[in-house]
Amino acid sequence: MDEDDGSRDTAIPPGEAVKRAMERLGWSQSDLAFALGVTTATINQIVAGKRGVSHAMAKALGVALEIDPRILVTMQAEWELQQTDGPPEIVRVRSRILADYPLREMIKRGWVPETDDPSKLREKICRFFDVQDIGDIPHLPYAARSGRNSAPPSQRAWVSRVKQIAHEVQAPAFNAAKLEQALERLSDARSEPQGVRHVPRLLQDAGIRFIVVEDLPQSNMDGVCLWLHDKAPVIGMSLRFDRIDNFWFVLRHECAHVLHGHGKSAPKLDADLTQTIGREVDEEERIANAEASDFCVAQDKMTSFYLRKNPLFSERDVLAFSKKMSVHPGLVVGQLHWRTDRYDFLRRHLAKVREHLAMTTMMDGWGDVIPVGQ
Image 1 (cartoon, rainbow, N blue to C red):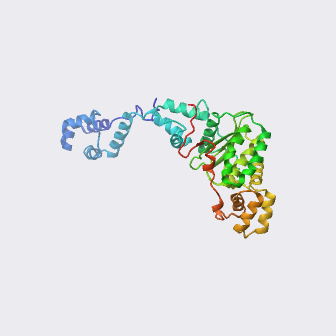
Image 2: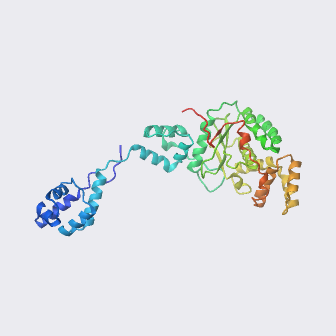
Image 3: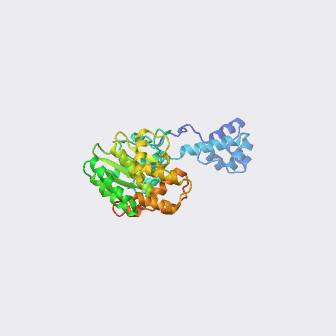
């Protein structure tokens, strides 16, 4: 049902004002028609509310009847608005959802089917967020940086998509010891971009559901750690930076959350993650950042190299140090970037990894949609 627009049953047609002015002057409809140079039928239709008053007619009536034409124009507009049917209910539903969530992008991505049925749209949105009513959609805490109480709508939508896909994935019960073993094996995979191909299987064996979902515009999401239940952790990544340094840092960061049991009460959202290194964050994020940095390049060795070579880091020195540490040069370059704040330095070594990862895991985004139960 349409909501009352505030003018229902209150507006009157401008013909009523014309009629009162004629009575005041003692004029008949024929008299007014004569004064205006129009037919009596025209005046009759205006008085009966069957004919609208144009701006030109309002000015003519204003002169003839000595009334403000703006009154007639306003009355006409309010009368027409009152007589006009409200928009379809789907307009109200779409607008309400769009005010809080990136509905257009969610439909474009295939996360929510497009429909003109308001009931079905409400149902699909509630199913997407796993709630009974749109008003029940939770406000997730914002983890990565201090100063924000809850995650923006685009981030909530992204995390919900990760969770939705995770429910479709089968995995054994989580085993922390197996995750530790997986990380030891993955440390050997850091030397080549192709090494990322081993991530999905090793995490799966440890009982972790690894989900890749392209980030939404302006969400700046890097990753998330959440739990379907106590034995079912989920790691979601966006790969918004298709770089080897960012991939390993974000992955190890989320693995740290899992190992320490973070995110069980509420998902740990990580946005603009590398911008939090060395900054004030909560204790859980500090731990995850430290472990992720140390995984990319052992920090005691990295600090020693930095102090010895600063401020002149030659490409030869970087390559030699990378080889010594058995890591891809991009990981060393990534560490130097945030330490020196020089993000243009040796960027050609920041190898892309997404195409390699796509060989061993399904990805939601970049033109593809992972099918989920509807």
